[in-house]
Amino acid sequence: AQSVTQPDIHITVSEGASLELRCNYSYGATPYLFWYVQSPGQGLQLLLKYFSGDTLVQGIKGFEAEFKRSQSSFNLRKPSVHWSDAAEYFCAVGADSGGSNYKLTFGKGTLLTVNP
Amino acid sequence: DAGITQSPRHKVTETGTPVTLRCHQTENHRYMYWYRQDPGHGLRLIHYSYGVKDTDKGEVSDGYSVSRSKTEDFLLTLESATSSQTSVYFCAISGGVFEKLFFGSGTQLSVL
Image (cartoon, rainbow over the protein chains, first blue to last red):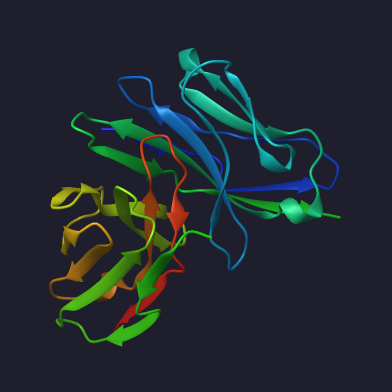
């Protein structure tokens, strides 16, 4: 069974600073990987996703993520954080167990606070 | 926005009573999911469906059952509600593997 670990529960950065949110997954085969963001009182929005190809993927709002198979990681990065990036970020892994049986499992999330 | 509706939006019930939450979609999407969101636990998968009458358990399925008799509806039933099932429940849909999830607005359930 797949699982996702986000080691950091809460991260605080200053506006303009760089950001890296960590995500580690466990899955026997190549997983489908996603990052979602949830702003306060809002639903979840997809930032980016990865399955194959270039291991550095670009997403919306200036975010990018890098897949590292050797480390089972899919870390999210942003060069310069804006106050509007304050939100909760969720890493997710999708797994297909055959017969179209596909499910998506989320990590516990990382809450990002941005200081002015 | 994707056509996905959850009902009810809010519900207060008593311990031991059965509760059914409904998720309705107008997108004809194959995959439907029920998650619960609790502080410190993120989104946890309860049950999901990959087609009509095709359902499977997620990571926190105990005490819950689901049914999907037609493409557009996915029902989540709490057989006998407990206080530990107080949570926000989200339904989500997607058109296929590796496609983005569209989430409903959520149901706030309180079990007293």
